[in-house]
Amino acid sequence: MAFYASRRKLRPKDHDETAGELNIIPYLDIMMNLIMFMLLSITGFAVLGIINVNSPSYGPSAGVAANPSDKPPLTLTVAISDKAGAAGFFIAATGAVLPGLSGNAAAPTVPKKGTDFDFEALTAKMMEIKAGLPALGYPNETKVIISADPTVEYSDLVHTMDATRGKVGAPLFPDVTLAQM
Image 1 (cartoon, rainbow, N blue to C red):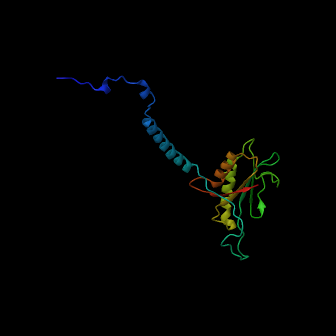
Image 2: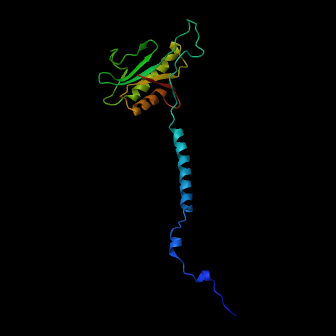
Image 3: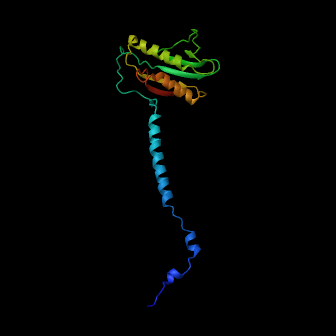
C-alpha cells in the first residue's frame, strides 16, 4: 500500500501570509458595548440637569383683557448686579423696586454677603413676597424674570434660579424667564 502525502501539508508555512491578519472582531464588540453604555448614561444625566426656563416673548399676549378694572400683571423681576457700588439682588414688581435694608433706593434689596451672593436671604425675601401676594390679589403667581449683569458668573445665575424657585415641596416661583440687563 502506497502512502501519498498531501503537498499542502508538506509545504512550509510562509510567515508573511499570517503576519498581516489581525482579528479585530472582539475589539469591535467591546467598542460597541462601550458606545451603547455611554449613550445610555449620557441621556440619564441630561434629564437630571434640565432647568425649565422660558424665553421672553414679544408682542401682545393672547387672552389679555382690555378691561381697565383688571389688575396689571405682577411682573416680578430679580436683577443680579456685580458692580462695585451696588452688588447684590434688586427685586422689583409692578410699579416699584423693593428698597434695601438700609432704605436707600440705589442700594440692592439683598446685598452681597462679603464677596458672595446671599442666596439664603434671597429665598427668604421670595418667601416673604409669596406670602404677601394673596393680599395684593396675586395668589397664584408663579412667574419671575431674572436678569443678570454681564459680569455675573453662570453658577451664580443658576443658584439665583434655584433660590427663586424654592424647595421641591413648597415651590415659590417655578416659572423662570431670563432677560438681559
